[in-house]
Each structure stands twice: as structure tokens, then as C-alpha cells.
Image (cartoon, rainbow, N blue to C red; front, side, top):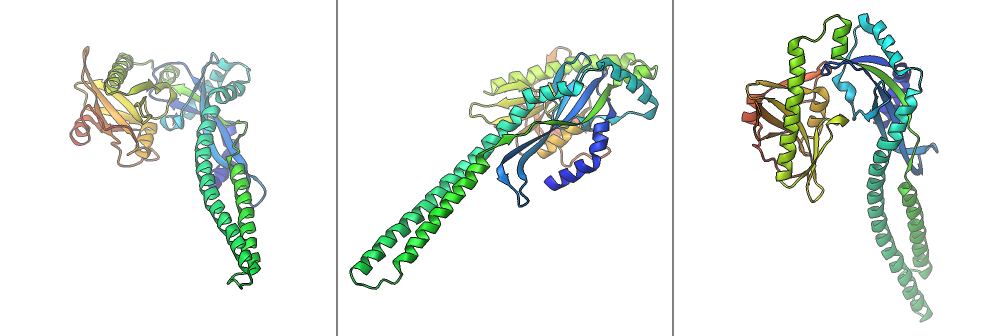
Length: 368
């Protein structure tokens, strides 16, 4: 996989640095934003057969920057929910870039990554590496120390036999050399493990960028302001999503979980809910009117749900009728395939979901 990533970046790096323009069809607003792609590597103290420092983790971070300089995390793959901008609007897109002036916007993205994203990545890798190395070190030390002790004692026994005038089946020197070889092997292995334990974070680098145009702004450029239906749909959706989030978070608390709203982080779910043992589940909330027949799931949400099936990812469906909010229905990983390359979103039938996949309003426990 590392080789595939390296070859892909090598072949497309110039295109990534050149940047592109994408459209967010789910955003009815008129405020554009910039998306920066930031490459971050973590290495340990070992080298490969060519003497090059070994990369043990590599992650692409994404940072959004608003025209006023406000930064926020973009999640693991926000671009999956965007579509290319048609050529007829490229000139308007270039003009839009003036909203950010001549400031070093990429430095703002790096500052956000260094302050918020890189430390999380480093801590995850460091803790995982320390657990693995420490367990291996304990096992190696126990096994080789036991063998060194055995052969050291065996040497003394054989030497005593020779001093007493008996001819042992093994020469004492052979036992002594075996003990020394095992001691050397133990010291060498412990040095290797200590080098693997020495995790170092490299400075992140911006490798790509994109200008994100919201659907509302695109309609303005086309002299097609949002229709009353679009405006109402956007307002209605925002209000229902808020009600749905509140309903699911209250329900999680009633089950003894501590929910956290992560909807702004574009992770592929809206709520991370943790129990008292530290087990987590990941909940994507969809709130719809009681008479709605379908829900729309973005490509990013579908991909994350597919990859996390069996690992605590749930789709929580909340039916809203006026001010009445029904108890949420949890559907565990309803996706049986990955999204197709040409799919920006997938429409799911609510009745089919509730009939075939729903686990009522109480999902199973955490991921364990």
C-alpha cells in the first residue's frame, strides 16, 4: 500500500498542487471555502534495507478555511461528497479566490493541522506502537533470559562434571558459547525494539488544495437563485437535523452513554458515543418528516459505514411530525456494497430500512 501511495503521489503531485474547483451540492449557502490536503508522516528509529528512515504511519489531513480565515477540520475524505465545477463557471471561481486576499493561506492550514490534527495522529500511532513493542519486549526478554539462565547453569554443571573427572556428553565451552550468543541476541533484539519504540513526527506539508463552491452560490452565478422550495427544504432540513441530533443524544444518555457531536468534523458520522468502559459507537443521524419515503446518504457516509460494518457504526433514523419527535431507530451498517465511482450519494427507502434492518430504538452495546 505504501508503494501504491508513493507512486500515486509521484504521478499526480503537480495536479494536486495546481488545485481544482469542486461543488458542494448539499450546501444551499453562498459562502465558498478552501480545502487543503496535508500530508503527515510518522517514523520510528529504524531504517529499511536502503538505509532510509522507515515510515510507520502516513495520513492525509484535510482543512477547510473560510474567507475570514476561520479554519476547521475537513475529516478523512470530504472530497467524496463534492462534484467537479463545469467549465463555464471557472472564471467566476478564479474571481472568488480574491476573497482570501494575498495572505499565506496554506500556512493557516498548516497551523491548524499542527495544532489540532497532527497531535491526534501522533498520539494514536505512539500509543499503538508502545503497546505492541512493550508486549513484544516483555515476551522476548522473558524467553531469552530463561534460555540464557538455563545454558549458564548448564555450563556450570558440565564444568563441575569435568572437574570431578567425568566426561560429560557436551563440552562446557559449547554451553558457555550458547549462553553468550543468546545474551548477545537478547541485547540486539532489545536495541531493535527500543528503536521501533522511538516514534518521531515529521513536519506536515501541504500537497494539494481545492476551492469549494456551495450550491447556493453556483445558482447565483447561473442567475437562478434558490427556489422557495429549495429555501424551505434547506431550512426544514436544518431544523429537523437539529431535532434529530438532540433526540439521539438524549437517547444515548438514557442508555448510559456519553455522546459527542462531531458533525462538523466530516468523519462520516455525526455522533461519537462512549460508554463507561470506553467502548465507542459511531452514529450517523438522519431526521425526516414522518411522511418522507426516502433518505439520502452521501458517498463519504456510505463508504465509512461500509468499512465500519460490525465495528459500531449505526444509522439513526428519526421521524419528525411538527414538534413531535419519535424515538430514534438504529440501523446497523445498512450498506451491502461500496459506493460506485460515479455515485455522489445514495437514496435509501425508509420503509425497507425499518422493515429489514432496524434494531428498534436500542442498539447493541459498544464495539467491545
